[in-house]
Image (cartoon, rainbow, N blue to C red; front, top):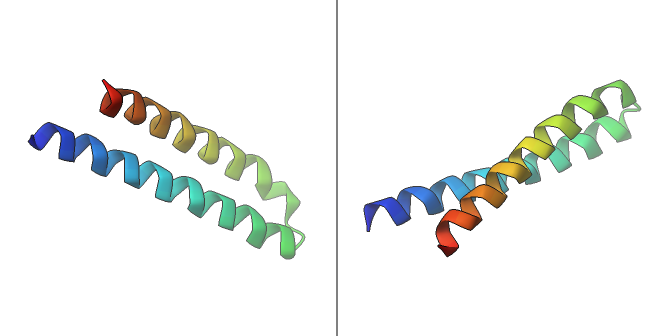
Length: 60
């Protein structure tokens, strides 16, 4: 049971970080800081990958 809680909390953290990166991209876009978008895109991709991996673990 504790393993499921640990995996689910990791999933929620990954989804939260993905949402944070979307917000950061919007923030940088409004300030016309487009050079920061690739960094946000990399962090967003990693967060989505972790969330997908955690989802696969939870479903199993």
